[in-house]
Image 1 (spheres, rainbow, N blue to C red):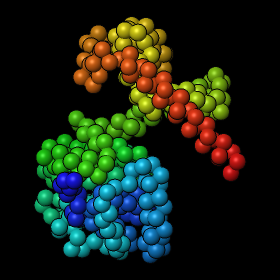
Image 2 (spheres, rainbow, N blue to C red):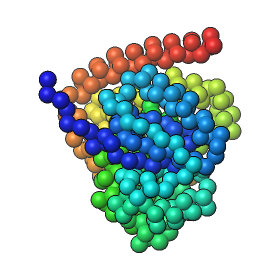
Image 3 (tube, one colour):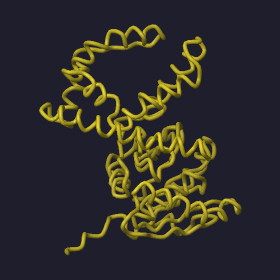
Image 4 (tube, helix red, strand yellow):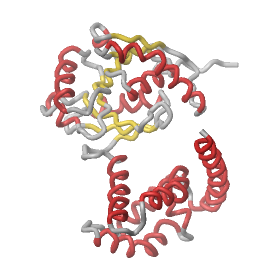
Length: 321
């Protein structure tokens, strides 16, 4: 049997700043892809907790069936020194505090190698606030994960206005080889994509509770029992397409006016233009040919059944515990 060529992540140096849950999860994930990870945290107790936290992350990665073929290393240090100069990427996973991140990146811009990707796992702070000088942003970007990134393998790569596309591409390749779906955003936007979608659902959930339409348990049940399983498999655009004979255009014609009224009733401007619907339809056709839609509908029905069975088994186990 011919051996596969070595992964580009094998033996490369990655520095992760911050040994909290996100930093440890990234360390486990990149080390399973073969990287040599230096996990840095100035807190003595936090460093002492790393071996146990790493073991747990490797366990959940295995449970998810995501274990890598190669196992790299994770070194724990109080500070990064020589590692900054020869690392492929420095990934800052510290507190969600602008002043702290500004200080960290000021140092990284001086001490990291000129070809090193400088990324932050910030949940909401854009890179243009962390490094305001556009002339210093060329290798800087946000790498926003979903928690826990060891299992939920999607990463939003958010460039600053001055980010060099070459560094965004290098970051995308690095994360993809480590097993992530890396989504490079076209421009910087507050909340990125995940939190903008999440905040839309949460805003309406709070409103419905506040208005007495339903209670907290009702909202959670609708999401967990209804929308969640479908979105876990298909996402909102594919769900609309698979739910409606005639696809995206038919769904927009049927539900668009009601959705538009709902949005405008909340003070939100909604434009369900024919041009936008056509763009979404064309994008879906690039992903899935029209002739394959019935097969995909049948697949989803079976997949949803299996997902519900697994979910209900887990919920029963949680109740027993």
